[in-house]
Image (cartoon, rainbow, N blue to C red):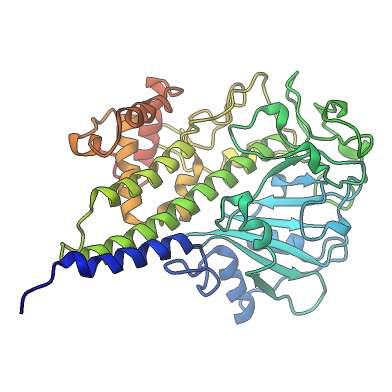
Length: 442
């Protein structure tokens, strides 16, 4: 019997793969978001509560808040306050009763004065943003994973359809109700300073650089230009009763770190998901074409490089907005954060702040130490390491790699890192070699 061309068998497979890719989202394999048990810090706390190895303490002022922060190693100095009605417990949130958010490198805790529940989320190495609730009633504390209602926003266009976190700047009226006709912005390192923190309280010094915090519109029909400037605030007691909160601050430096790490977490999630899908597709195609199991086609390599480039651009602050005035907080967050390390053999740390023209002294994200970064698929991580060696260490691009991209793409890959001086590149490389296990040469 004559052997039919392999392409006849391959065509239905390719067609099927195309249809699946068109439908793919985080609820489908290889992610299977709702069906997969997280491995994040909140899940570990949930297990400790179930096993009886840890108990949470409730108090009448804040419910389980203090105990949860202690259990998750989250400092009260990270407190930021948002008064816009842009979360689940909108009925309890207003400029007089803002929602408090506390965070660490991989955990976020939301507390609402008089709220029914604590809102807890984490960055899971595989899944991305994972969301939980804890009823604010004394008794048997039980943390519940949320896989539907939170994702209405946290798995939407706001996060580009991955399970992620959100920092938004919105115009509000006096009640805290957003005025969406004036627009809303997802904020990150690239957001102009004067567009940040609409709907948030902001404490700290920032010179003559204005922002949208601490203010609301006089009425719903007002235009954006009528928003009053209320900057360089160090005491919020004149704006609302601060006594129910753990601190009287909503630190500007903490806010800058928050918006940075939310952005990077989302980039890591998107790149990680794409990396896992790329590996799945490569395995299918290699089997179908009887190629070596670890063979990487040009298409596979482009997909890995694309995911890696997004990560490298995010962690090296490729689009960071340059500060026009020095920034300083007053909550103790700056001192707390800088002590976390790790430190290299010269005492340098990626957590050291600049706050004169940019966020960090050495423009490389501390989230390179996070589980989400360290757990990236190998196909993505190897390309991240390769790009870091090229950007920071001057390693040449190989002919094989260059053949994957157009001249314009190759040029763009160079231009986006022009903000880094030769000295900064060397120092960042030295710190990474001393404090991580990344393959960055010697």
